Length: 208
Image (cartoon, rainbow, N blue to C red; front, side, top):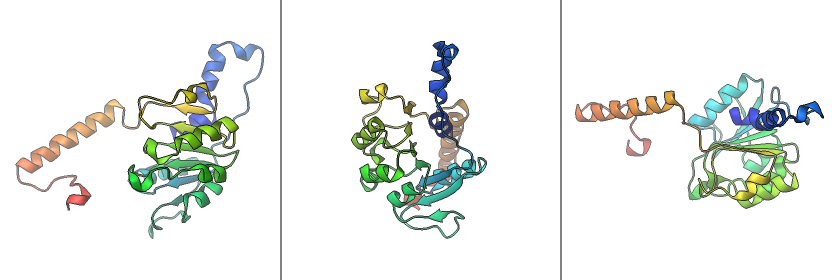
């Protein structure tokens, strides 16, 4: 949601605009609304559902895509990422990385998102065709992007640095004191359970 707000309302650019003293000579450029807009979630797993929950507080209309429709999900399902993109103002990518999702968000999906659409990637850099994304940002065939992950991070393609319609963050998803403490506590609790011969708290699903 931070990236959605940051790129939609151009918060980093606004900060720079004020710091540079530009406000005294001209108004800031128009931004994009977040409240009441259409959110498409690519991958309605645990993280995707958490995003949808937070987006609902902004009165966003939520839809999703994935391998299959979820019977317990109260949101509209689209069978492909392109169909979802065509019906979204903000497209948030929240699927696992790997060969199955490599370049899932390609030039066709970005074209479907359109010149008023914004893509946000908090999944893995490999999920978006980075060459196609940079071209779409340059051509303004999409309105913008909020990116927390990249191909070959932390070696970011320098073309991103020249673009004003993208917000870049350094894979910051879990990078809070509270979250890292909780992760460490959970790891220790799992180790203690293992050596005490008790069921693990968070057994990896593939190992069940």
